[in-house]
Image 1 (cartoon, helix red, strand yellow):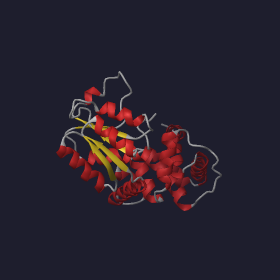
Image 2 (cartoon, rainbow, N blue to C red):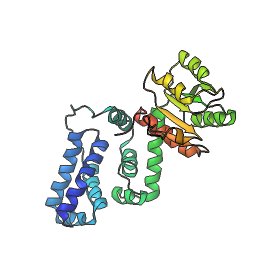
Image 3 (cartoon, one colour):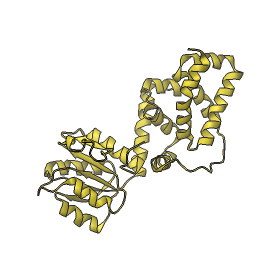
Image 4 (cartoon, one colour):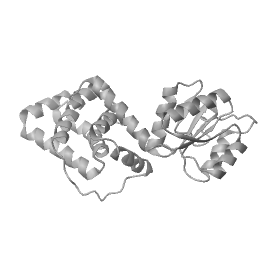
Length: 264
């Protein structure tokens, strides 16, 4: 594939990354444009771009790391997920933010991200963990657990606390959940579907969502009850038996975007 065509194919993704990294379309585009201009002026840099997508991002990284462009940012985020994500990313230190975006948004392996950032893969993985920790600290919230199995409820409670959050209540029935939310609206809900008295975690969650848009993670042994296509399917769904790291990742992502609405 000719170099120009190869760059054109990858350019939309680089612009997406630049926007997320810098926090604004104008700033991101300015860095992308500077990268292309640098490649035109430097034959060695231009030749390196023949290495494909990793090489293009590596060239961008050199420009981004060596300069900072102040560009007026008077644009509003495109939607609520982008607005929430921007607020979280703004709180993450630049190198950590870069490692997180490369390995999540852009789906590079740690080895590829290390090549782009001119680091060792282990360093990239450490930066990603630091970024996740920064997000968790910034998004500390009150969590409601709706679960009728005591041992699982306690396991989730310990996990949530280990992530730096507080428990505003645990409920085994829809009625108990209603009593809790009458006192305080949670910032996150972890909910089972089938509850102790035959009531539904879905109904309990609907009670909460009637008050406000609260991120919800369903943790259930019956995922097929939610994946029917008859109603909007949940963004965050963890199947029992679960691994704690899976729940941790879902918690971080749900709080990062601040919503349970599907990511368009």
